[in-house]
Length: 391
Image 1 (cartoon, rainbow, N blue to C red):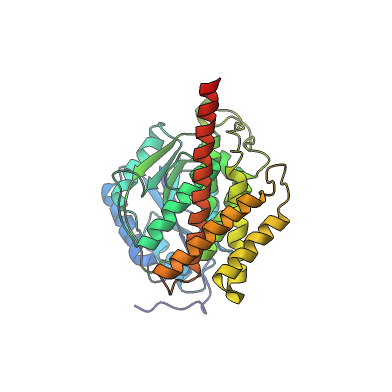
Image 2: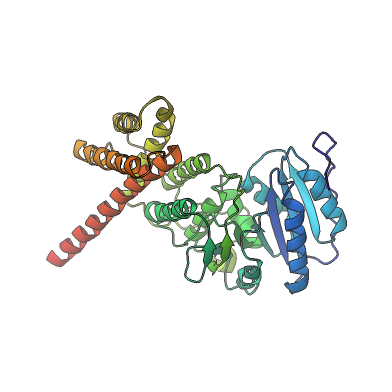
């Protein structure tokens, strides 16, 4: 059936009408998803109707779509009693989740991606620990034992590198920050959301980092996950935005803050603690890597790979200034080591994959920086153990 295009007036979302007050409010953020929206929402609705033991609501959050997505969302909300929809004037997954979760009265709020890449059988295991009070947040993970994942090697490598980078730079304990399958107790969300600045893809990561620093309990559920070959995610721009977010959170002067509004955090916890101090080497290294990748991506269209690599590294070294005392300029030997390792990574990539593009080059450079961080951290731990033994 051909749906009317965006030239028709977009209907206004109706006022919510609840039959049973939902226990779970599940957001589905969408942008120009006219092909997948209806079959996915109908499949999700049918599954919850048949298997979920509590009242629920599905809220389609339209991020300023320009195709027939809002018309389809309006029709689904009119036909299916547990489905509602809202329309936002701006794009951003984080912005959509903030809008749905802030307005919800359900004790548990969550979201999943519209392509339903995550197996729906994990929904009840995701929500149950929150309803019982065992945990404050629950996330699906594709990187824990028991998960079954079908996706290409490039996305697998990017996902694993990103989560390793989070562990090295922010000392996080959760295993998979970006899986589009999460839930949180509404009382915890009300106190965490004012502390999360990002409104796009980094929203998930920042929410989890803030929660972990607050001492909230994060439950992980291994999931079955099948990659969507028609994914709309722009890998390079998303990766760069995530790196900027990591640098911002890592260099934030306030490692913790008081939650908005009166009262303490769930389970009797008070103000967000100051958290663990930043690692003396890892945080500056992450910022250097971020700056290098951004400059390289800007220079690469006009220069050969090795030239862009050398120029961007030299620019980072020349312009490096202390940032709140945490970002000293690397010594020349350290710069030479960086240059040698990144140049070698690009040379190996060019030899093995002659037609590699910018994405592959950025991945190779990020891996080189990560290798330096891991090596330096390992030597640092070994040195501290030696000092302890000597004393």
